[in-house]
Image (cartoon, rainbow, N blue to C red; front, side, top):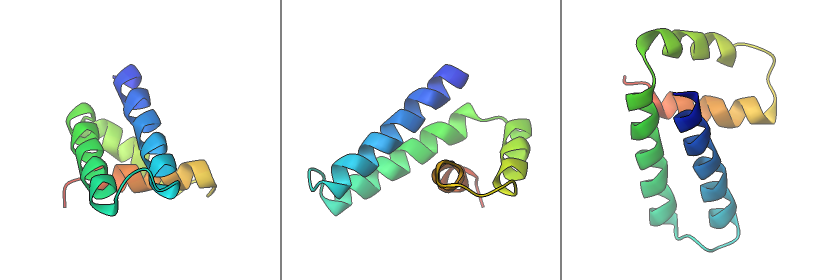
Length: 77
């Protein structure tokens, strides 16, 4: 599970990079974000979601911000 999560996290970072450098259109960027969120949702179990929610409340830094956004997209409403 961690390996899959790390791979998706790396893809999210690359998605951000390529979008910022104009290599991805806005719609492609948004589609990728939704795809990554759905994959993370499948990977995570309910107990992992609770752990990550606690992680979000921890000291705030940029990497945690990026992860938090990814996780929030993955958690069903």
